[in-house]
Length: 441
Ligand code: UDX
Image (cartoon, rainbow, N blue to C red; front, side, top):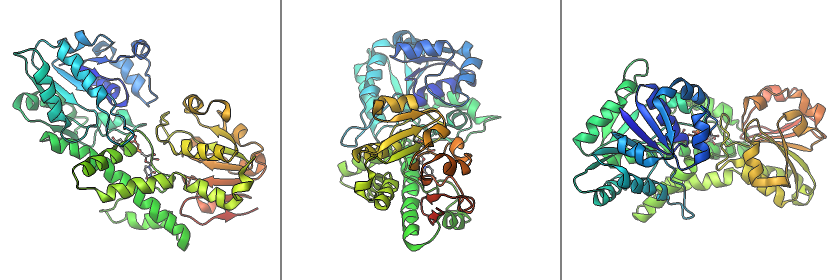
């Protein structure tokens, strides 16, 4: 099939490349010339394992362009995968979605199915369909289908090809049959992805309900973890004990310094906003947002308590990990940002290590901090290390080097990277999340 995809961010580009991989002819549209040039050379504008490989492998079926008119007028199906960033009041900003709609209206000459992949508030697909059909040339009909995306960054390619499920919300037969055709290859060997159809509002809700449930799981375990610190229990033992109950499972139970990224923070706030607007506030979602806000600075609070506000000035702190999680260069809502800001407020000297996120970090903090692409140099002669992201390079780091290289081997670990039984064998101070502190110096 001839498919156009609007937007070449995580959702748009990975979707486009996956659709080409299963045999469709895909044109990826973006307004950013630089990005398009890069992709034409076979380079991905985002760091995502396996993506460039697939872009190159399927280059015969992939076109990248800024010429939306041609792309949309040729297409049988147009996927919309543009961003829906959060407004200051927490609501979703749909400007990019409607900008694509205007381009579609201007371009198409025949009936088409528009698929909304961007995460949008419940009811948006209905409004988009109404908007498109009331503005498009007479005689043309546009069917809108909701098709939420469940990929996680770092595993986006696998999550798309071998998705946990494909959810499609349709209201008419054209959209239903076209979507079945688009996704048929994914429902067959070797992918065998479950394909679920429902009405559009339910499909929109599946996305928010899933993301907010996962965010809630993390906030819940973070609160339990903080409580473990107060009562002398160990969160890793507690979650191990919980995980044998199949209803709970063993996923998303890692306590830490809070969730970040492009989805959980935005989607919790957007759903909460929507519920308040409808006068049926989702109180659990509100609690989840509040807990996460505090959790991001939980480690910093411990540091402040341990050193005292006055003694932070001039302290040399090395931050290990900048990105919101390993496997991505994305810094959106990363706890490292909140912590570095807090440290700078107290005139701490900050150095940071990250394997891929430094360029983006430098755009935020400029020369107010020091940047290192290796851990040894970053921690050398420092008073304190704070771990923000559980990169393998950090998890596999030789713990003995902390006492060899640092002025004072004091480690605050926001991601529980090291087992206590191992850390206890070294001459370090080790303060982690929801576990006993180790004081060996
Ligand atoms: C998430 C969802 O997983 C995905 O299905 C959805 O489509 C988009 O949002 P992503 O934001 O890429 O994906 O990352 P994810 O791996 O889910 O992690 C999100 C955040 O939660 C990270 O900051 C991570 O550190 C944190 N997290 C995750 C925890 O703190 N503890 C956990 O146990 C798991």
